[in-house]
Image 1 (cartoon, rainbow, N blue to C red):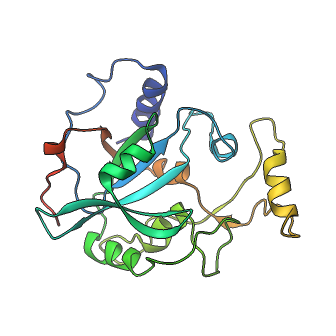
Image 2 (image 1 turned 135 degrees about the vertical axis):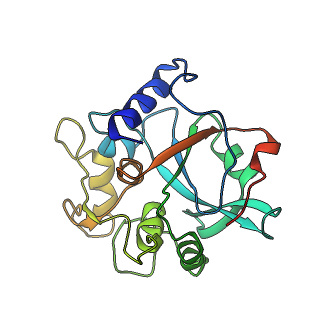
Length: 220
């Protein structure tokens, strides 16, 4: 999906416009698809990662099926309790009111990428969003593990920003890092969920909630 199509899709979601002519009919989720959460209201994350394209995303999770092709669907995610597997129904219920966007990268090495992500299960959540430590945040899990069929990282690290649209660092971030005796890591290497969804190879496939039958998939 081209970048312009992606931006039109997101803008339509937030405007509650008709999507019937802009998106394909709902399709099955597959192993390794990504679930992006667009909250109903702005928060500390979206205030500093939402660009001119109005892409407001604050979380990302990985689709994983336990038990093979007809197994149970889970969201492999890094959340407050750490890197964990959440039943997909629970993931949807936890994000009630949000728009959940399912997207896919066709060049993904699904097996090795998801297998690598699963090795981080049990790691603590990184509340300070710092690379190189044992804790992991949601988009970091994806960025570290997702490789293409040639073994190359799909998502590059970016310079993180904690500035809002007006160029100011919100007090939330100043206070958070001050409590730990740290400066706000403006410009330090990292990633965020919105940046992943903006990747030019990302293809939006559907939005949740979906019917139970649509969760059946041809697991890779």
